[in-house]
Length: 314
Ligand SMILES: [Zn+2]
Image (tube, rainbow, N blue to C red; front, side):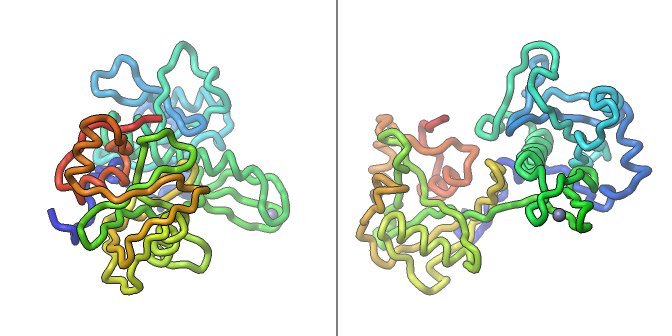
């Protein structure tokens, strides 16, 4: 593997549903969703229940007929997610409350989603993204009127001034910084326990390129300076992370000046690791890296050259 290749095996980016956006306004198609052929996944506040009887770790699903009975005519509670390779439609059923489902459920969140089959992971991350967005956008941000769900869950419409609101995705950068000795820079957020470290990350600000955001975040949080030339940066790929609405843009960057001066607010500690130091610290449990679901872990292991042991979990 070379550093010029984009990641092609990240969680939530593999074998996704065909979003088939043209069907979101096709009334006949949308009516046909309420049949046994449709696969419905439940979603509530960033989590979905698992099918405890599935050997493949699948989500608990329902069909379109049962979903229609469940929502009792309130179609705003359904979103059309897309089609699987066989043409089976997937929908999300938005729950108001977990207790709406009978029986005990095991709920899975973004950090545990690595165990889901790829298609279910794709349905899950889309359902969570839409659910998080609509839960935070009940009213028009311009005039305050209540919003109505339209386009099969993909727009929120303000009837007062005929305006559509679209799902939000907030770009954030995440970067593995190397120095000229090929050491890697990791930081520990102030709220994390000792030993738990990750790559540097932060949101892209209005009017800013992703590349400038890499330079700014790394400098603000650690004092390390990335070169002005874009040849100091390599784009490695992106990962949706709707927690609540992020799209993580992964980079590797070369430091021009490697002196560390942490900001002490967001980052409590940062340090450079040689490969030997990182392997040893991981093996002894002194260093805990993010789980393999994350683009952060993939950036670290791409630099390191192979998988590393252990991870932190929250
Ligand atoms: Zn409005």
